[in-house]
Amino acid sequence: MKSGDVTIRISAATAICPSPTPNFRLALVVLSVGVASHFMLYLDSVMDNLLPAARPFLMTVYKNKEEADIAWEVMVSSRIYGLAFGCFISIYFSKLHGRKYPVVLGTALDLIGILLTLLTVHIRLGMVAATVGRFINGCGQGIVQTAGTVMLAELPPHHGRGLALATLTVWACLGELAGMVISLEEILGNPSSWHIAMGIPLILLVPAFYILISAPENKRYHPPVYKEDDSKKALLVIQKAVYTDENGNRKKYEENDDAPIDPDQSTIGFARERFKNGQFVRPLLLGLFVQSFVHLDDWLWISYSTHIFGKFGMTMGTAQRASLFMSLPQAFISLGLLSCFEDFTRRSLLLLPTLFSVFIGILAILAVNFGKVLAGMPVASTLAILAAMDLSAAAVSGESAYAIVPELFLPDDKILGTAIVGIAQNVFGGVLTAVLLTAVNKAGTTLVLIPFIVTNTVYVVVNYLYLPETSKKTAHEVSENFSKDLPGKQLFETLRNTFQLLTLQVIVVILTFRTGLQVYWGLANYFT
Image (tube, rainbow, N blue to C red; front, side, top):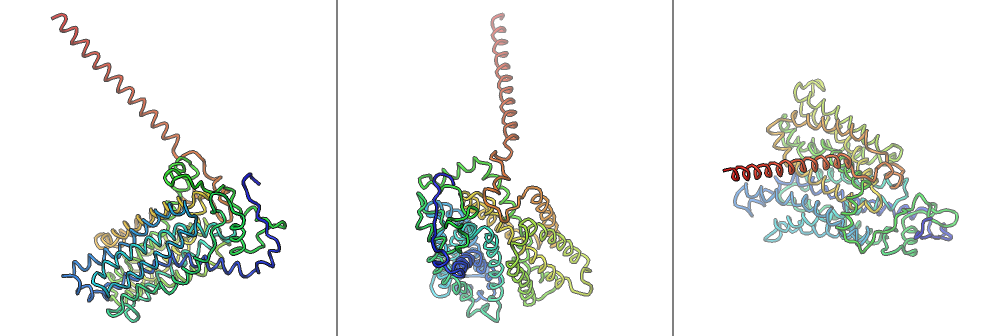
C-alpha cells in the first residue's frame, strides 16, 4: 500500500450485510441516476408532437401564429442551454462536494423545473414560467448527467461498471419512447391535457429523489482526508462483502489509488493544471470525438422522422405513428443488451453497429432515389424500417460510448473531462438539429445522409486506430495508453521555433534596411 492509504477492515461482513441487499441498493442508486439524467430526454421527445395540441392555448396568449411559434421554439430550446450550463457548473460543485451533493441538487432542480412547466396554462405568465422551468430542468439534468455518470463509474465493482453506465442509454431510449407515446392525441396530446404530458416524469423522479438522498457519498470523497467510518458505510451500503479479502480489506482492483482532490485548490486552477498534462488532454480529445459523433443518425431520425416520412407520402397521423414504432426496437434492444453487455468489448459494441449504420445509410439513399430496396413497399415505409434498424444500431453504440468516456479519464479527471464532453455534445447537437430541418427541405434527404455516411466511416477508422479498450480495466491501466506529453507538442515546438526564426530574420532584414537607408541619406547629405 502507498503512504496515506487507509485500510478498511470489515469484520463479520456476511452477518452485517446479507448478500442480496447491497446489490439491490446499488441497483436503486444506478436506476435513480438514470431517471434524473437521461430519462429527462422525455421532455424533448414529448414536445415534438405537442405543438398542434398547444396551438389553441398559444393563440389566446399571442397575437398571431408567428409570435406563438417563436415563443414555443424559445421554450423548447431553453432546456438545451440549461443542459450545457448544468454540465459546466457541475465541475464546481463536484470539486467542493464530491458526487452525492451535485446529484441530489440536480435532481431537485429537475423537480422544480417540471413543476414550473405544469403552471403553463394556470397563470398569466405561464409560457415564461415554462421557459424558465425547462431551463432549470436542463441545468438539473446537466449536473446529474455529469456527476451521476462519474458516480456510476466509481460506485460499482469494476466488473459491473460498464453495466451501470450502459443503463444511461437505456433510460434515454425509454424517455424518447415514452415521450412519443404520451404525446399521442389519444393519450395526452390534445388541447385539454397537453400541459399534463410535461409533468409525467414526476412519477419516477420523486422516488428517485428520495433514493438519492438516502444514498451514501462515494468513498473517495470525504475531504480533506479519507474517513474510515464513512468509507466503511459506503462499502456496506452498496457493495457485497465478497469484494473484500480475507482480512476485511477492500480488494486492490476495487480501490482508487489517487489521493483525494485538494479542497484548497480552485476549480480554475485545477483545470489549468490538468490541461498541461497529456494524460488528461489526450483522453479528452478522444472522448469528445467518441461521444459527439456516436449517433449522428439519431439526431436526424428522432428529431425529424415525422417530417421526412411525410415528405415521402405519409399522412401526418401515420407519420407520427411510424415514428413511434420506429423507436420501439431500439428501446428493447438497449434493454436486452444489459444482460450481456460485459460479455463484449467496448470497442466491438462501438464500431460494429456504426459500420452497420453506414450500410443502412447507403440503403436509405437507394430507397429515396430508386425505391427498390424493399420490392413493392412505398418509400416512406421503407425509410421507417431502415430508420428503426439504424436507431437500434445507434442504441448499441451509444451504450458503449457512454461507458467508454468516463472510463478514459483518471479518477480526479472524470468530472472535468465528462463535463467538457457533455457540454460539447449538447452544443454540437443543438447546432446540428437547428440546421438539419433546413438541410432536409433544401438539399433533400440524400444529400443529408451522405455526410452522415462519410462521418460514420471516419468515426470507425479513427476509433479503431486510437481508442483503447477500457472494459474491466482500472483507470490507471487505461491511462497507460496515453502519454503525459501534450498532443502535437513536437509539431508545436517545431512551428514555434520556425516562427521565432522567421520573425528574427524579418526583424534583422528590417533593421538592416533601415540602417542602410540612414547611412545612404547621411552620406548623400554629407557630399551635397
